[in-house]
Length: 220
Image (cartoon, rainbow, N blue to C red; front, side, top):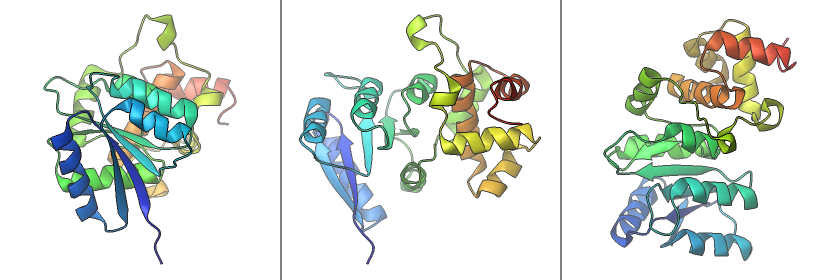
């Protein structure tokens, strides 16, 4: 028997919270949604011992934004995946979202199919960013911050198992498409991993990333 997947939804707009829960339940009958109207409620549930397979949080909330919430979540439950959603008209801060160790971003205008793909990726501890959002990121590059608080942390400590696999294949000269085929993930997911790796490495180019990975002994 397939077990239930417990998904926590965090949004301070009740109408969207109710609607998202209904959409997710239709996607898969094994998805069980628990709504939280504020980040504080979700954090309190965690601290009380409640466990979830995935958190989906709004980006813009009055009490605490989604990025800060993901950081608070990871401080309490590092292995629990999280997705950030938003209806903002401006380009989403993908670099900040990835730095917080979220598993991706989904615009509120996305289709149910996109949401399902993002949820499945996050549950597999992969990263998901829709193609159109990713193209915006590629066009502007991976932003670099002058804030010391945003400085890249040690790659040896911050890269996940999947990201290390991606770096290894990059070092072997594989393209994103080839990496996706080898790891059985979408090319879009590979691009999202590469973006996160660049952020952790503090680089903006593939060659620099591979060189640094070799210097650190992450790849041969």
